[in-house]
Length: 238
Image 1: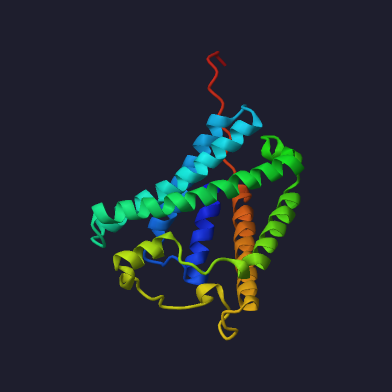
Image 2: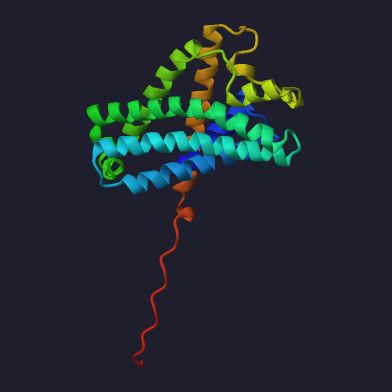
């Protein structure tokens, strides 16, 4: 599920907001969608059944390591593509993202601690069975709307990769998007103000919601349900 969510987010970022690029979408999905989800799931399994504080600590470590793993593979790909020497780009990426990873770890621990205090049932295995599907949808949309409304307050500083690309001088290798729909998380014609950012965010939430509903309906199709295994033949005579 985590891989599907991250793949959808990364894909929509590239297609709607021209953030991340189309030519490197596969690399971005691998670095930020597959590797990070595997790390998170591995640590989740390792911490299963342990105390709440241990689980929070493990979640923080997993969040930090997932950022570092994404930075490691990105640096490796930049070297393999001939964009920058490995001895230069690898330490630059790891140092910058080591600090970013600390922020990711703090946010992860804070979010899980808050959920554990107000809705601890959501962190258990039985949560999916005990809570209806529409309840999850309402909760997810509520969180998404809060994030969208706070989006204009986000930092305008470049992210880790852009910072490294600028410092090392290969930012000019970035290719422009052939089509711009909502470039830079803004609505064309409304400028780059807060209203434009909020409306673009709402469009992104709507797109992700429609994609999730469509995928859910597709997975529930009758022909997508596996057929039961055939019964073994009896050994008796007829």
